[in-house]
Length: 188
Image 1: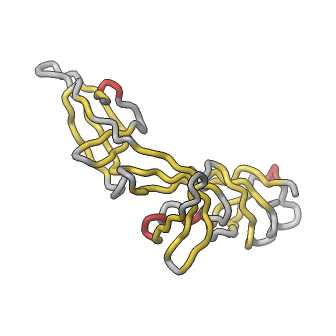
Image 2: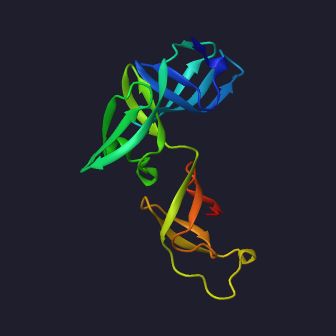
Image 3: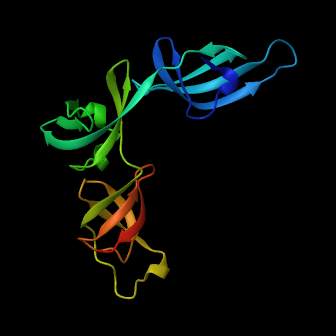
């Protein structure tokens, strides 16, 4: 059981038979009456945000979520095929289920799939990925890394992000998947 006193950002609880992740919380002790906790939670199945008030000390069951490492195999129309790294079972997701991860889908890469009650509900990419730059305008002569300028680059997965001027087509760059940001260029 998880008590409201255990709340912190990112903790997962079972509320009304659905898994929620606490995104914000505030313990409030009014001058009159009992203390309570004001929370903002995200439904992990639908993605909808919800604000709730709970009495201080109220308890919730642990949602018993399971994380499974799966390898992305291939795309077939609007279906995306993954394989469990332990049991070698294949699982198929539709485009709607993967909309948050589509910019980082690359064949043969291992992703984390979140299961709730035996059903997959979310796919998470690795924190950092190495992707090839497929299209970017050339840097202008005289532009240097110290200049601080950036330009748009289209990566092999279709993601467009800002990169320094010295990055060229064909370069491999490391990208932070949490905020879609350039980290560094990888030497071949």
